[in-house]
Length: 393
Image 1 (tube, helix red, strand yellow):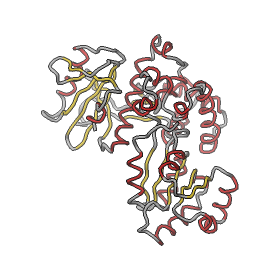
Image 2 (cartoon, rainbow, N blue to C red; image 1 turned 90 degrees about the vertical axis):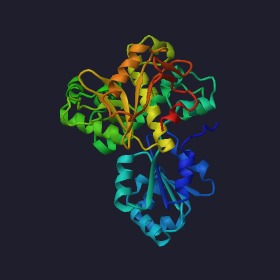
Image 3 (cartoon, rainbow, N blue to C red; image 1 turned 180 degrees about the vertical axis):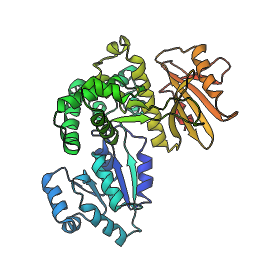
Image 4 (cartoon, rainbow, N blue to C red; image 1 turned 135 degrees about the vertical axis):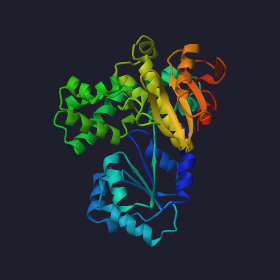
């Protein structure tokens, strides 16, 4: 079954106005399926096939004569030489929108080639895993706890019979073998798998690179390189703190989040909602889910807000969104019914921002419905409530 994606309208709009549309993202997020569904009249070729990749790399001109536009070029990062010829083809017919639609699962290589050859010609878009609303649109009975553990990879909702643990085992192995071994030349994949699991256990927390390196038994420079690779390959997000005044004693470390809460849960050894309810990691995994939902809503709805967190010696907000002098504050609480103290914590952060600049303060929780807390300036809201995330954009 097909799971409707919120980003579809954005991609159709970009393909109607730009000659090249690039869709990147982590493996298994549905890039190829989405492009083929949205653009059924385009020719299609995947460079995941060694024979096609070899021709594209050895003789790009002949390859493009075989596959003239409009065409979808899948896993195009496997032919770096092809990008120079794409530039020539685009410049020859600059007024033709949607001529070349490119996908790639190795952003480290793909974006380097796009930046070098297609700067100013390509619209670059990122496909995230499914949001809770997208998954529940396909399966209305899905609970948010089930979604957190199952994660947002489309294949898991197209076929509910897939064994989730086996899916994630294969995904991690594919990522380690194909992506990291190629780009980092990792000698010991077991060390990197341990590193990935250690990162998952820290999801939703301040990143201490020295502690992370020490726990795995690797150097600080190696830990830094591996974190950069995880970030560039769309496995993690490093959320930076908000600084309104550089002299304030705000924390300077970023917070680490895995992009998909289901992958984080798997790496933490949580495989069912029952495991989740009994785990001390439930709060950090819930925060990981809220982070991914806010980020997806920003990308899919073109929100344009800068995304941070706030923390000083006595005040904290999990998420701070800023645009044009306006702010939105949010906390993530695993509780079904956050209380007055939770609302007061957000108000204290709001009091540090310019008067009248805070447009919304929300506690994303597991409550069945949205409702006001205290004076009504802070609201408790379920992550899947209709239009709650839309109001944030």
